[in-house]
Length: 342
Image (cartoon, rainbow, N blue to C red):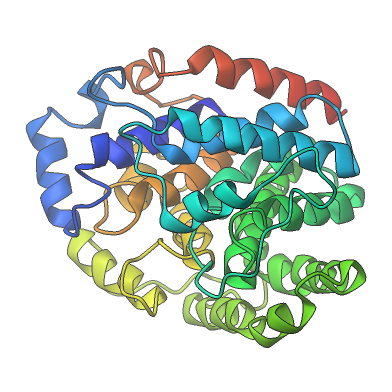
């Protein structure tokens, strides 16, 4: 939870880096700041973005131990409350629209109208904690159902809410120590079919959801083929040159709308790409997940959560996280989720 927030703040940089379309320019600015090891992530220069505010809302809802309908109303209420803390945090349009329609406490009040434009990464960026609450293989159906329903509160399009499923799943896989090369295959062969079955059972916006379903899975299959991990094993296939400039081109190619990481399918995709390439090197993870010319706080918030589960804080400069905004809230709900998951 803590490193996830650190990745968010570092990628966001008060919006200056999130909306900077040039990875090489961001890398140059990092160098001018003395490198990652010399960056002290604290207010006022390094606030959290909307990503972590809503990730906290999800996590603190899950930490109550509530389940099913009661949990969904609670999380919806926390999203409504969280939107009051968005000054200077750049929430997305679909998130703002979705939360404005939530009516927690009323029957069906955690559901919103289908939005064909709800394809963004707003669900993906706040769902990692679902994998912390339901980390075991036998809890996969609970993970999927909660990720789908909380994701649909703002992003009812499958490209949007399946991004939430991916982030939650990858977090659970990190806890399980599944090989990273197998994560994408598990997403499209295990979690997505479960999500489709769940959506059918619930029967909400079924026609529209089925109509728009295939893009997410097809794009993920394309990515797994590109990286040579469609078998879940590898070896991973990388471009001959894959520096900051080359990554900008590749990441933007993941996204039909041309802003890498801004969609539900490719925010977790770039996060996975960074995890595959960085290994246990925090700085390399940040170079790949946070310091690129796309929606970099959203890709970093996912990648850093998974990396933290795999490697802890070893090799992470303390200044990157020790004075992070809302550090105590992040630690508190992490401990609560850990207790509930056992």
